[in-house]
Image: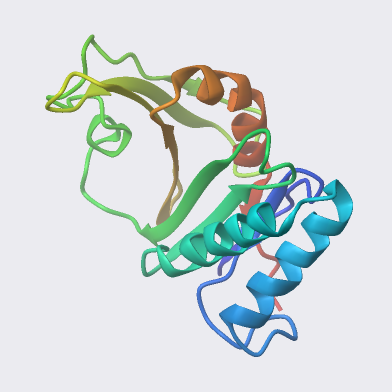
Length: 184
């Protein structure tokens, strides 16, 4: 079984990590089609179109192996966000470990909470604020489902905490959209 994410295509963009994909022979063709579409929709000048193309390519090239990456990329001139979804065999890690509760860089205690109403059933979530060596903060949230045979984990974070909080409802909606693909 694999995951199926019934995501809002008006907000989120699935970021492929292997080519060819959906009729695109390679990353350059996908990147350019995306940049052209957004430039046409929003009247971007050449510099903004190039930025969109470079950002899209970076999103695709930066994906980890086994990561399902989604970008909040419907209006990249207003807000940009990334959510990573992982499906893995059931691990021996505790919920707290999977949720990052004991992260030593967290600036205050992390409180996990229940996360319901999703297609995967009940899960857990936790948000932490971590500080880097210079004291700059980043908000990171994990959503976790412990299924009988696998763990599903979604991670989103942003050093712009106000932007992260503004997109939080959309991150939660994406998490609720994760389900299991129907068996053939």
